[in-house]
Length: 640
Image (cartoon, rainbow, N blue to C red; front, top):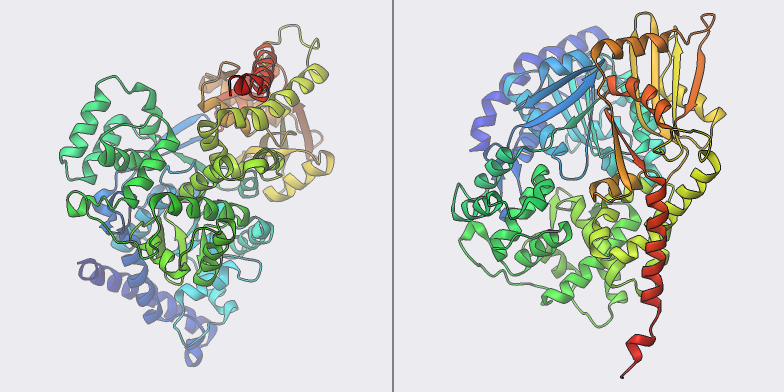
């Protein structure tokens, strides 16, 4: 069905756009006799057929390993962007051609499960359907220092028998008309991220008049792409969440019963979950399995696992038992998954070759010597009987990164034993803390005492020490504190890359860590504004804010357009003698926070999370009391 629909669309795209571009390029460079050195129309035909089929199919957790077409399940998501005081919301039911033409470089950044990959795959298909350009989709986790972006593009377009000339391939790309989807920046292996980031930036700078759409979870490294227009995905409205639930069983009994329960008013505490497409999916799977609504995120994942292991298969109507080749029971299978999830966390990878994943599955037997199985049989179970993994060509990967994080969190809680505190402390002290935020968010609900002792206590203690040293008594009207927050602006008449601005800041402040950065043109000025802090621990606040804890408060800005414009004028006046001028302000008091906040609001930020000093001190005392109670074992031994 997909092939018959795609064939005329792909043939039209190749004949009308790709082939003329190749012919024109060959004539220009005089390579008609050596045309095999660059991709030909047959290469693009094969690539588009292969990728169109691949991205037209979803393999959601709801249907185990049964495939469904993306168009059957897709709910149009909404992109949110804010520039110069103006808010735009763009419903994505295809490729946003006008938005792409306006900005050319888009960064779609949002938290786990918000649909970043799904939305770009929808765009990719729509470009082919309507001939908007030449789409190339790259999964960035495949890149390493030895396998660059240009080489990966060549591999995607390559026939099995020939390699293209990379310089000529780049020159073909430089002729324009391409749309590059660079998916999953956050999934690049940490040890490779610096070199891969440099490679991506160099490719973009050389690639000419093309469009680039980058996706990632939020992380500090994204400041390197400050010339991209940042957009986020609007949370689902309840109506949209209900529509998605109905799609999963064709408006059947399960979705109707679940929606009725959600509308009853008894489950308002999980309204936040309905805003996230992945959590809506997990909710459906969990409810279809047990007819109960889990109230915590990690319980969602457990019920999803139970449903898959027990063989509950919606597509087959009722329970259909899939035989497990590994012969493992549900508890032993869970133990192996927990170890595997933690190993993948250490490697910072979710995708592996067959040999790599078999080694990890084999290593689990050394940790659990009493559990015996054949690694190949277990891998087969993970693909078919308990499909929490999927195969993508020669690669094997977790169905979703958050599944790996869930099992890793469970390993830390259940299996690490005496190493638990050390593991959590190491995650907290990591220079890449933002890569562990979703795991720690899950861990908070799994083991609140462990989180409070090893994450929250050192975080609050560090804040109180900072506050007493830097802020207490210095501002009469202080009612809030923003942990080590700073804002830098840089203004220049000359063209300068965002990365160069960031390096200039690091020269005077090596501890600075960016959280939010923008670049824009203001009359004849190039203006950069970077919001961040000197504390690598500040991302923890994002987890705490979602838990609605009493010591976390929010300072919101409502900035009229005229004030926003006036704020930008103030930035321009910072220019001194037409020489680039560097300005920084520490923002650790409410008046200064509002001043800079007004500027940030006009560029996409309209609220700031802060810590209440007195309440933080109270929370520290409460945590120490909890620890003392647990450590006091005499009461447990009495009477034995």
